[in-house]
Length: 162
Image 1 (cartoon, rainbow, N blue to C red):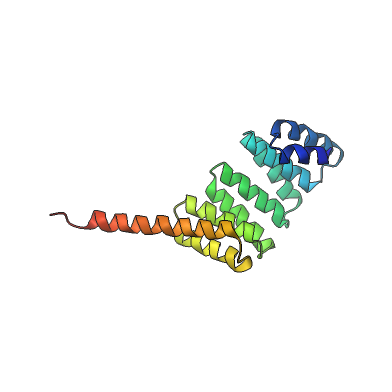
Image 2: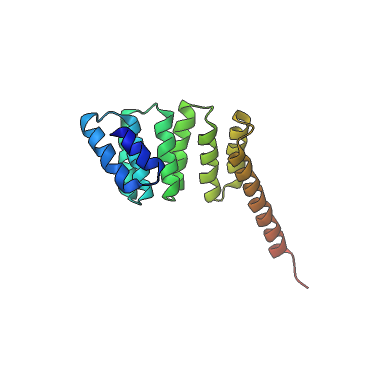
């Protein structure tokens, strides 16, 4: 059942994936991967509240699991709950400091809150861990671009007009 759910999840067939995870979780309610995957599938449907409940269940059962916190953080980003996402991703990086993915996603959440300097710091941590991580480089470049354009705009707006 879990493998079938995973196949549906990989194929973006989220409606079919969730009942597979439900059946597995009835038999094995402590399986963190099925809670995570069910949560991710529900987030894509979008059944946001149900998705967060699944991921919260996983974090309650496995509070030291970086993957559980990372998954919750990414789901919260997709729900535009950026502050909560940062909290979850902080827990992910506390439990696995060398997770380039978690640092990258934290940067994404920070950038969405227009905290570009902090976002760039998070992207830099991801790049130090994984120097060829193209998404961290890309996101860092975008954060710099947005920050520079905002600075130029502010300079232009504060310049006296003749």
